Image 1 (cartoon, rainbow, N blue to C red):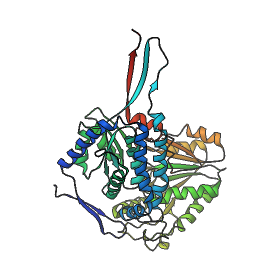
Image 2 (image 1 turned 90 degrees about the horizontal axis):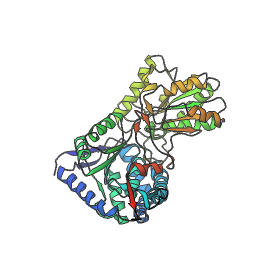
Image 3 (image 1 turned 90 degrees about the vertical axis):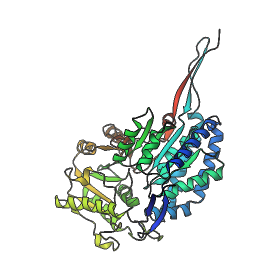
Length: 465
């Protein structure tokens, strides 16, 4: 056993919430060997039978959403009034959809008849799928890979961020309860070196990573040493554009939620808004009002609507971006003194709306990952498109308008993985979840996820001799 420890400090009160030893090389080797061995049988189990077992585990987790939500609150700080929703809504929706489409999506692709021949393409599982899940939405991000990987006939080795280790524990309990064959799922505790070794292990056939851009580069470098694919869901600086004909009341409500929910710690959260100058003042005033209505407090209290950021250093980074923008001429509009819990040197940070911003400021170009949004006035669709595309990221973007045709035309010009009309910060499991530029590569969710988690194998059979 290793004597190196993984420690989880709760942002709620700074206490040590979890501490456990990193898995030794022998333990990781045992997990990989068991996963490879179990997968050789699992791949021959009918898809419907796989789905029955996997979705039974999903139901077990959702039934315990309150307890698991409270556990998550202590690990990463989201208010306990909101944390269970991660399991009851998005987690369940995505798992159920991927289970529902699995039989058809994984079926053989039959080719038109040819005299004397039978031809089809079979979707063959890749083997062991290594899933590297983040802390900000550990259930939502992990389900994108864990469930479809198992349904596709793969085995899964899960490494969860050190901030939320108990998510991996609960997955293991759920799969054991559901009767998943031993070895098909493993939760490992590893550092960066351990992850790199797993990616380099010949038993691993695919890597699904959600995290930072530097982390994605590290995964890509490790995977490049072998001929294996990866799915990388990385950062975002997601924009929204409000046109003059938008339903402002609804637009402001949803944009405020997209910017401030989970303390802004969402890769597809709204970090910059471009409002047409005809409605700029109304949008800004509405966002400030929404921010002032939030209650920044102990996230274990049921009345709290805004919890701490995951750690003090994260809050400090956001404060620095805001202060730097102010020094460059920006103005903050939210009165932080109204939030008694907002104190430098702590992870508790008030929401903020910043105006008089431009793209010379990091606040408008670099990922912030906190409860702050910059708002700029624009004169036209063309200006909005130019500014939305002026970013190294491209995960999601949204437009708010009553004109559907205009929304589609604008969306065709914006470099993004997902384009929304009159909504934001949501993943529809029927659609491919993907990014462009530094937001990543590959795809999860939708039927395309099954193509990523399998390889095509062609059968060319001469049936008439």
